[in-house]
Amino acid sequence: MGTFLIRRLFMLIPVLLGVLTAVFMLIHLIPGDPVEVMLGEQALTADRAQLRAEMGLDDPLAVQYARFLAGAVTGDLGTSLHSGRPVWRMVAERVPATLGLTVAAMVVAIGVALPLGLVCAVRAGRALDHGAMVAALVGVSMPNFWLGPLLILVFSVNLGWLPLGGAEEPLAFVLPALTLGTAMAAILTRMVRASLLEVMDREFVRTAVAKGLPRWRVMVRHVLANALIPVITVIGLQFGALLAGAIITETIFSWPGLGRLTVEAIQTRDYPLVQGCVLMICLGYLLASLLTDLCYAAADPRVRLR
Image 1 (cartoon, one colour):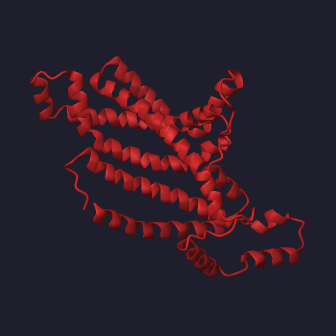
Image 2 (cartoon, rainbow, N blue to C red; image 1 turned 180 degrees about the vertical axis):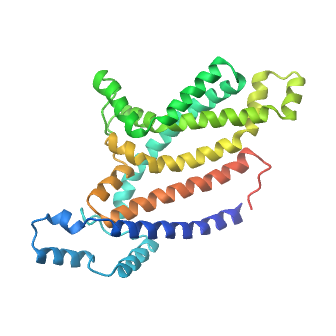
Image 3 (cartoon, rainbow, N blue to C red; image 1 turned 45 degrees about the horizontal axis):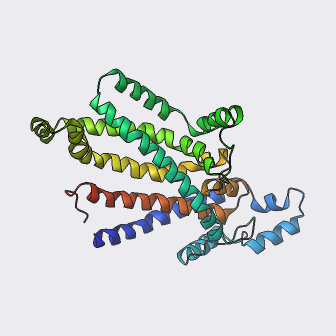
C-alpha cells in the first residue's frame, strides 16, 4: 500500500505540470487584456504601461511561465490582479463551499441510484424497470444550465419553498445539490443495474439461492458486494467531474464556491487566480481518482495495490 501511494503521488507531478502549462498558455493567448479591464478603455497609454510593468505582464511569456512554476512549487500561487489578495487564500476560502456542495450532490445521487438500481435489477424486464430506465435517460439528458433555472422557477419563484441562491440558509443546498446530483444519479442507476445483472448470473449466486438463503440477503451480501467495483469507478470519476461541473451550477445559484470564483477570474482576465482555481480543481480530480483506487481493495479483497 505504501509503495502504491508513493508511486501514484509521483505520477501526479507530470499531470499537474501538463495542466498548469496548458492553462497558462490558453489564458495568455485568448483575447483580452487585464490592464484594460482594470483601467478601462479610456486609460492613458502611459498608465497602462506602468500598471503592466508593475504586474510583470510586460515580461516575455517564458519569464512569466518560469515565475509561475517557481511560485507553484513553493506554494505561492501569486497575487490576484483584480483584488490584490494572495491567490491561495482566495482559493482556500472557496474550497469548503464547493466541497460541501459536491458531497451533497453525491449523497443525492447515491441515495437515489443504489436502491433504484437494486430494484431495477430484481425487477428486470418489468414495468418498473422500464420506467426507471426512461427516467434515467431523461435525467442524463437534462443539462445543468437548463435544470437549474427550471428548479429555481418552480420551487423558488412560483412556490417560494426554497431560497433563490447563496449559501446563507441550510435549505440553500437543496436546489444546487439536486441540479448536480440528478445527472449523476441517472448514470449510477444504469451502472448499478447493469453490474448487478451481470453478477446475478454467476454460479455462486445460484448456489446461494439453491441453499435457501433469503433473496434480499443474497442480493445485499453476495450480489451487491461483488458488483461494487465498476460502481466505485464511476462514483470516483463522477466525484471529480462534479468538482469541475460545479462551475455552471455555482454561477446559476450564486454559490460562493470555487466554480463561481473561476468564472469571475476569467471575466476579469485575472491570470494568477484562474491558474490557481484550475490547479485546485485538477488536484481534487486526481485525489478523487487516487481514493477510488484505494476503495477497490476495501470493496474487493482480490484487488491488490502494487
